[in-house]
Image (cartoon, rainbow, N blue to C red; front, side):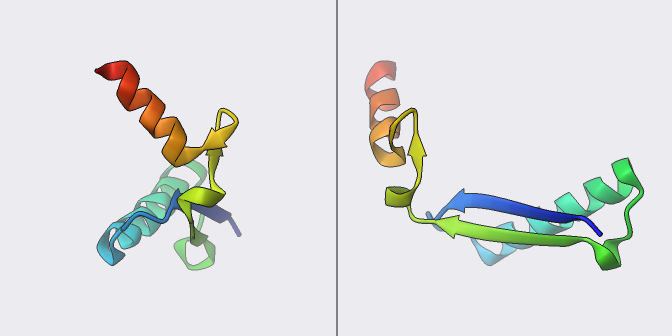
Length: 71
């Protein structure tokens, strides 16, 4: 009974995109591990960007640094 928890930042992933993630992850587990779709659980948690950190800084600040480096 696989349980997959996907965490993404809360930035507007649509219902359709989430459905595709759920379907795709389920299909991957069926194909690779021969798991049963009926007992495969996929949960998507959306995390506010101020609650998500990368390299010791909030994700928005991290992204701003990357954008500045590319200009």
